[in-house]
Image (tube, rainbow, N blue to C red; front, side):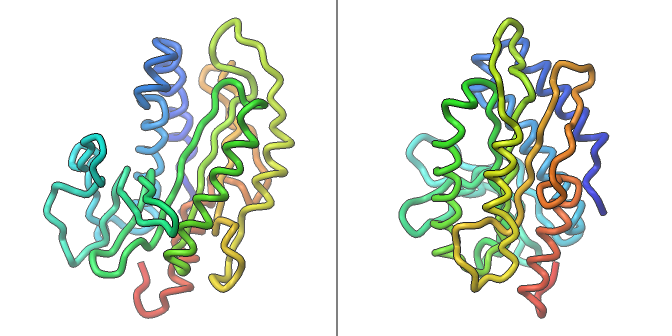
Length: 238
C-alpha cells in the first residue's frame, strides 16, 4: 500500500509550526525531526502489518548519556520489534539507528536513517552525504542481508523568515540517485537498498511536496523496503 501522503503533509505542517515556534529548540531538541520519524514508523508498520510487529515507543528506549540504547519494555519473541534510536553494532563503531525493525535472535531486518537540513544546505550537504554513505557501508559490512533505507528532507527555501539561501535540489537529487537501489545483497555495500528524497516547499500552507525521481519517491519507499526484505528471506517473510 503506498505511503499516505495526506498524513505526510499534515506531518510537514506540524514540523513547520514546531520550527517557527523556536528554531533552535526544534533542531537541537530534535522535536522537528522526530515528527518525521514518527510518520516513518507508522508507514513501515502499516506496510508490514501491525499484527507482526511489536512497536516500542521512544519513551521505552534507554536514552541515558553514554549508554547503549535498548528497549526497557519486555520483548515479544513472536513478533518483530520496531524501534527508534536503537543501538546497532556497525563494522567500525556503534550507530544509534533512527528506525529499525529487528528480530530478537536474528538481528536487524530493516533499518532507516532519517535526516533533514533546514539551513546551510550548500555548505554541509557534501559532508552529510559522505557520512550517510559511511553509515551504509558500516551496517552492510556487519549485516549484509539487512535492508537499509534512508529518508532525506530538504526545503526548497529555508523555513526561517528572512533567511535567504539558494538550495540546489536538482544537484542533491543527482547525488542521492547514485546511492539507491541495491537490490542484490551481493552487490557493493556503498548503496542503500532504497532512498527517499523529500523536497518540500514550506512557503505554502500546507507545505507542498515537490515530486522526486521515481526511484526516490517516498510514496513507494516503505513497500519497497518490505518487498526487498521478503525477496531475501523467502522462508521468513514479513
